[in-house]
Image 1 (tube, rainbow, N blue to C red):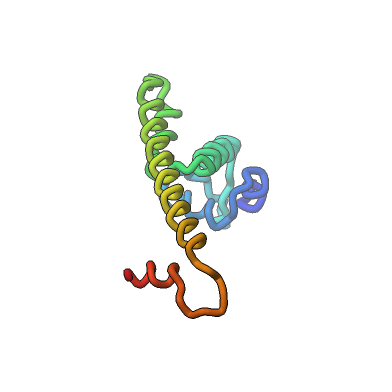
Image 2: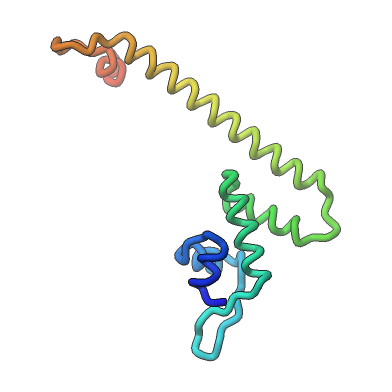
Length: 128
């Protein structure tokens, strides 16, 4: 498969596939003319990485997950630990977003939103 075909099959943009090759996630063969030639294994890896990225795993976490996937002697506890750490990060981000939402909601509620220049939202942003 060429890069366009593998992009269409995997749902991953060509530019991202080139980046994944650059960082060593995949290593497609090269034809005599220099074009990349992807096989089913490359497509499977791209789908794996794409799914992991859609769950918010970082590039380095994807690298670790891919290594664990390819290691037949892996312990599932290692995979679970990595996923649990990521879940904790997600929970922390959710808590931070909820806090931001609550603060902004309070500010919006406290603003009259009328023709007067006084605005609690701007005062808060200015640290007053």
